Structures are given as structure tokens and as C-alpha cells.
Length: 239
Image (cartoon, rainbow, N blue to C red; front, side):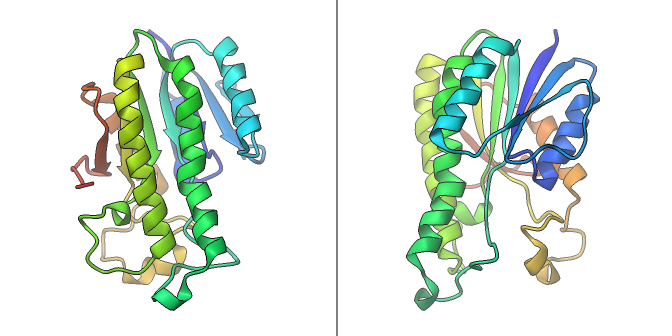
């Protein structure tokens, strides 16, 4: 049976790799992509949707999907920010800025949560459906041994809590849906570029490799009505 996929934050390198791989799957009918700018490549299977990630824009796209998609059963929410031209990860307490905390919280937690809250009406049904949201190991409270990176850690920890809480309601209202908080590992993308010198040999992954691992994890996920926090190797991470 054919399915539709939705890739949100489609301009990221991992998202682009996932879109390309999905578009080559025979049973994938359509890949809906959501981004602020038009995609870099097109195919008959790709339907680009532009979004400014405001609540209004997200609601408009979800209304479009509600009336146009068929068997939407794969959702990748790839939004996330670590650094930009205005700020870099904090190394000490004195580096903390309110604008950075608020900005990363919006990008890494609020926007993904808006999607989760609006997609439930589209995804509830009979077909097994997986939603993967890009989290990070540094968002694990129990795994935090090094400190620093306050805004990024806190925003990903907030995302993890929102995923956990959403999974409880999805289990009541959309029992066919599995939520996955996914840690991609250090991937060769602009997000990790400033920090790649310290990555051990063999631990800097290509976007294509991570996308393939994620899609495989989604295909084989246990549909248990519980949220999972796992890495690229399908290994559990403590919340």
C-alpha cells in the first residue's frame, strides 16, 4: 500500500537526503516538503510547501494536508538551531543572553510542538505512522556531564518533555502513531561545522547515512504508543 511522507525543515542537509531517498521508494506516492525557501531539487513525487513557521502558517499547511494527503504515515520534523551569525553556544554562565535562550527555545521546541499539536487531526487513523523529531543527546538531563551550551541543551530538553507529554495524548487519540526523538549524531552539516575538529575518526556522518538510518528506524519502530529517545544506531538514550 502506498504512503505519503512529510518532511518539515526541508532545507537542512539531512532532510534533503531523506527527501531524495523517500522519492526513490516505489511505495512512496508523494513527499510533501515544508521550508522557508523553495527546494533545491524537484521531482514528480515532491510537493514543496512554503512556510514561515508562524502558528498561522503552520495551521494553513496542516489544513492543506488534511484535504490533500493520502495515507500520510511518515513525518520528519527536522527544525533546529545551534548557532547563527548572532550567537554561538555558551561556554560559561556569563555568556547567557535572553535573546539566545528565547530564540533557540522557539526554533528547537516551540515550532516542533506546534506541528505536533496540529498534525494529530491528520494522522489519526488505522495506518501505522511514525513521527521523528530531531532532538540531541545533549538534551538528555541524565546524560549531561560536561555543562555549557545552556540554550541548546535547555531547548532540546524542553523538546523531549513536549514529545513525552504529546505521546501520552497521542496514545489516547491516535493509537496508530509512534513519536521518536532522534539524535542524528555529529553529521557533516553547517550546524556541526564549527565543532568538527574534535569529532573522533569515523564519527562524522554524511547526511545520506543519517537519513538512511532514520528511515530504517522509522520503518522498524515498535508501535507501542510510547515516545522513544534514540540515536542514529537505534540505541536508547536516557531522557
